[in-house]
Length: 238
Image (cartoon, rainbow, N blue to C red; front, top):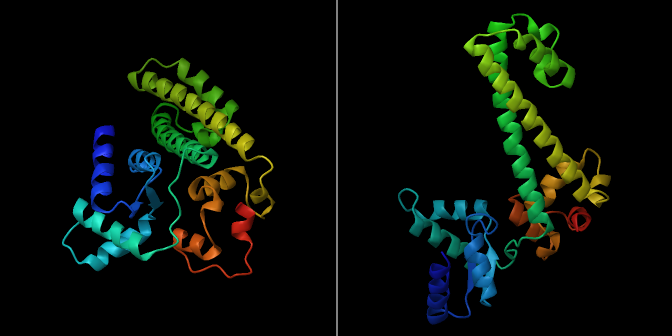
């Protein structure tokens, strides 16, 4: 909480005021602490999870614990000079939030659709020949009409699931429309195979590419082999 963050900053100031603080998950679980420390004028860097995970193996501590995680993150922070700054609530972070919200809704829609399919196999055997996949408006309207004539409990539950599915699909469409608007005109869309949703996910995961001092720093953050000096991928993301 805020009091704990201030106590942490006071402790840092007493122990090592010039130290650089490494935070894992600076855009999620570590966001509040990282932003508080930044606001107090301390140097804070983002530690990618794959680097701290690799370091935890080297610590040879039994199991996973908060002290073990802290030691691994501290060692990565000391060793890696090119760690990016922490994520802030900028346009790229907002893209990440929208992408994650869409993915949550898509997963919920899939679960609802699968459960509805199981209901319909009992209530309307053979329905899939005229309403395959339960994705189009005409197919859903046909199922709704056929279910309206049934009075069983399972039919009532199926109607509720169908209504939930329609709402979820509308919410997914609204988020996709917003994502398309936010990435419209971005140079990533010039790459073959990169559409608005892929571009939004990449930009949301990476953040502002200007955080990275070089292509190699970006590669280290992403957990891949160093990018050849001739590559223009990071420049394109900028």
